[in-house]
Image 1 (cartoon, helix red, strand yellow):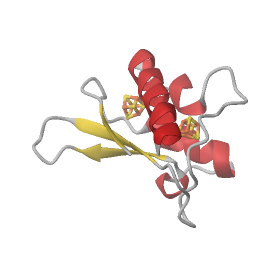
Image 2 (cartoon, helix red, strand yellow):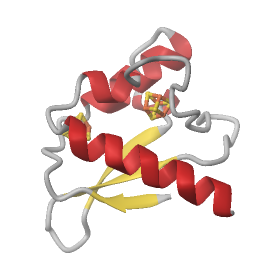
Image 3 (cartoon, protein in one colour):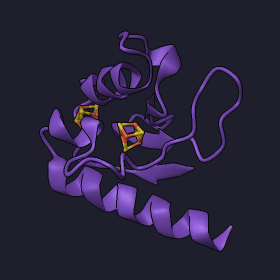
Image 4 (cartoon, helix red, strand yellow):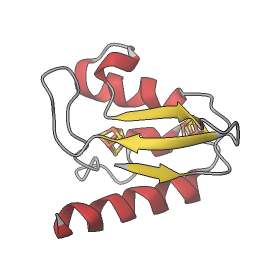
Length: 94
Ligand code: SF4
Ligand code: SF4
């Protein structure tokens, strides 16, 4: 699922944090969160995996943690938390 995040700076630290959570390694291939370039050059958007596909694990929201791994290292924490909330709600609808 794709979410606009105008304040995202594209550092991709969230991808590394998520990968580490899943595999204890740092690789964007193992991350449930992907930062994508906006095709129209307006910055970045966030994509979250709602279904695993063999390579990418589905985002479970890091429910067992007080603060999700990806949020811990994001400079725009509030916005990323809001995106994770929206993601949770959309998963329930689908
Ligand atoms: S850590 Fe935050 S600012 Fe950096 S790419 Fe991820 S969402 Fe964007
Ligand atoms: S909430 Fe957890 S599983 Fe989901 S993208 Fe963030 S670090 Fe990955």
